Length: 198
Image 1 (cartoon, rainbow, N blue to C red):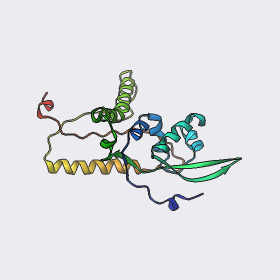
Image 2: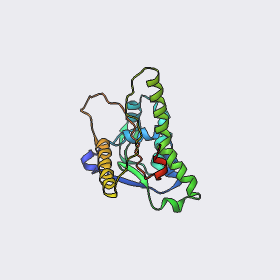
Image 3: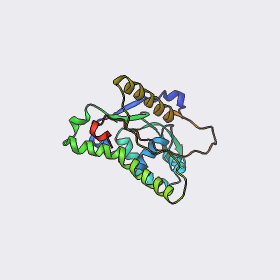
Image 4: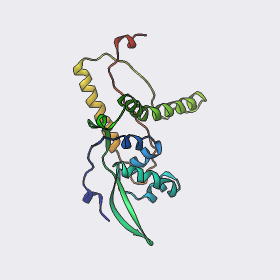
């Protein structure tokens, strides 16, 4: 079996350029699979980490592979079967310039992509806030701010934010340490001056 060093460094970014790729990301379960496959893993290993039946994951792994998010990087014999080893194609996936050429309705596709980003974030925020309102802990940070920035300040902040997200994505726990998945959604956009006045 190949080692991680033999596989080389993961690219920082891969592009989403087809409607098939957009649809493949429309699932919290598949997003978790991609996170767990940041290191080479078999479907069985991913299923074990997710405490889920392996049969439930094959469809999702095959879909992610067909969309180009997962690559088979090795294989090994497991009993009478050959077990594939998967790894993500890149650390991050972002809409590419060809995406609009491959979509019939840009407005509909933009709404779908925004839904992919914001839908899980909204559902997570609602669940966390409901727990907090029942007197439980808020295991995370939820907030919204509007700030006035110069173009230079914005660029500085954008770079710092991207570096923080990249650092969090690459963070690795000590072997044997208990970890908890956290969802991080970033949206930093210019707003109309009227919408910032309360």
